Amino acid sequence: MGNYENMGPSKIRELIRHQEITGPTAGMSKGYTQANLVILKKEHAFDFLLFCQRNPKPCPLLDVTEPGSPVPAMIASDADIRKDIPKYRIYRDGVFTEEVTDITDYWEDDMVGFLLGCSFTFETPLLESGIPIRHIEENCNVPMYKTNIQCNKAGIFEGPTVVSMRPMSPEDAIRAVQITSRFPAVHGAPIHIGDPSQIGIADISKPDFGDAVTLKDGEVPVFWACGVTPQAVAMESKPAIMITHAPGCMFISDIKDEKLSVL
Amino acid sequence: MGNYENMGPSKIRELIRHQEITGPTAGMSKGYTQANLVILKKEHAFDFLLFCQRNPKPCPLLDVTEPGSPVPAMIASDADIRKDIPKYRIYRDGVFTEEVTDITDYWEDDMVGFLLGCSFTFETPLLESGIPIRHIEENCNVPMYKTNIQCNKAGIFEGPTVVSMRPMSPEDAIRAVQITSRFPAVHGAPIHIGDPSQIGIADISKPDFGDAVTLKDGEVPVFWACGVTPQAVAMESKPAIMITHAPGCMFISDIKDEKLSVL
Image (cartoon, rainbow over all chains, first blue to last red; front, side, top):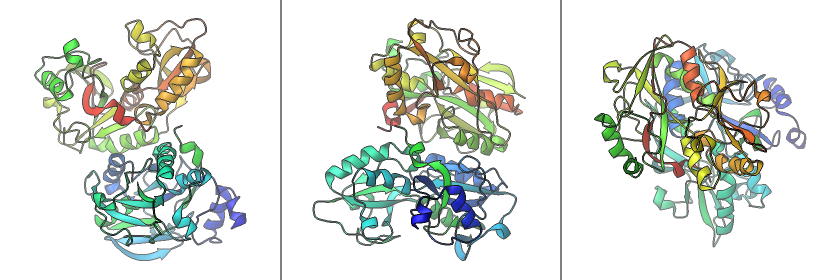
């Protein structure tokens, strides 16, 4: 991994394309933005694009491919989203049917790929500011929860906002608001701090996705809108076919994390 | 006007709807965001939405109506974009044909309205920071220029970025970068400072749109991506029908300018 950490995105994508890397991408090509992927057919693309536009905090779009083109031209012009992710999941009528390492055989000429920012991008500057991140310390996945905050509906797409949670001291929480506000293109500032019940979370020790983490005395839970939201919402609308990345197996772009900050 | 300045957006829209206001909206409902309007038929809506997504600086989308619905639900849920703008322009095959005060008779049930942020929103905090704005001092329209900076193409939509220019002292220019960076939803930071020729502007005294303003000794021209870009680009693609607001006659939303800042 030490090797992959300092390898450029184009080289990593080549290894992935040749299936020499088939697992999670966390820590690879340090400093470069990783992205979530959702692929839908053109008939749903306008509604889904509108859904993302209306819900920018959970759905921070980094790139959308031209219908039929597998090239994410804005963020990696030599990439192919059919091959450059280690593992994909296929959903038919909203049901997960198979996991594959290449989706060339599934690709149709009216498919559109949506690449969405993920919290990896803002965790790096948090760590660099000396703010510890619990799920990294505990070596598990970030805890995620369905909330009672409804997304703004668009066409067939609707559903609740999913949030990720990081416990912090109050002073770190304040600093984290400042730091993540600089990154509106990757979820931006938190959407809630403190009492989980105010956003419809009954039991903080039981996340809906990911793993529970320790909440220490004096710490407050800090909640960010999560990129799982658009996938969960798309899934519930049960399109005939939808393809996503497998959890943790992200698309590594040519964009530097720092390029996404507004200040 | 003193009266309109402190009147709420809903009341102003009512006066506009009853054609008691039929002219420019600058200065009305102080502190509330005003928006540019582009209406296209559904067949072009995905491409245009994608164009805006790929070019967020010139095309800062504030709201997109559901196809067929004239209600901009995100920014003014009791409004009707067919009646609540003082003056509209109708373009057929890219050619301006008429100006009207109500577009109910032109509305079709597959039309989509795009509401885009405008620089009025960031001019207020610039003025409040004591930065003089030349075109306001000289009581004319902001100067706008076509540049050699190509927008990212999407479907049928492509063309150059149009910029607006404000001359400033170097120290004001630095402060203006800070202030406008806080507003990524309304053009954000400048895209160029200084030498106009570097972005393809041959003669700063001859704007392509708006009016020329005085550039004083020691001042630098500061250029922001301009909301005229998407209209100009849409016009060049010559859709069978396109409807926009008339220059200066904007849509007044229920959103406070300050709500659009990220910090």
